[in-house]
Amino acid sequence: MIRLACAFLLLTTFLFGQEAADQQVAPDSGVSPQSSSTLSQEQLRDKLKEMYIEFQKMSVADLQKQRMLLSKMRENLAVLHVSDPALYQQMKLDMDMWELFLGHLRHIEDMQKKREALLRQNARIRRNSGENAGTNTQPPAQK
Image 1: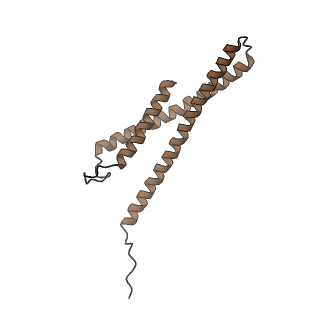
Image 2: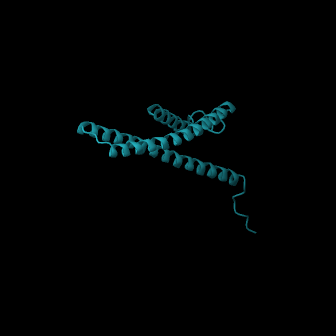
Image 3: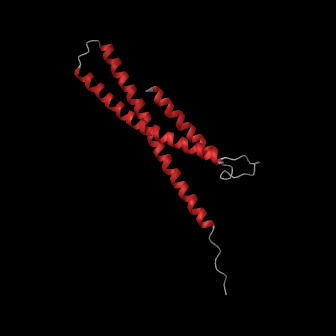
């Protein structure tokens, strides 16, 4: 579980960094981000996106299982008669910690969805501005 969360965080951080690196170019290079891309970098980016999508699908399924297990833990604690108050309290604290952790992962998942929506919107804007750049934007000459 912790490995899965760490892998998710590392992959998300890498993808955020990749987007930032794509948009940044050294000022003295004189190269735009689009022209600096080579085919191998594009292939690598596509492969990373495929891996991320696969990882995201697995993460969603794992999160659903973990939420279900946490729910079962809470139900079991309500049914069990734990005579030791310290043990009972520790079990509650463990469940609270898992709930916080799953909430954090849910928040990361929501942020990722928002990020993807913004990237799609940005791509549409770039496409539209590229289409409009080829058209004549000057007003017609007056007679």
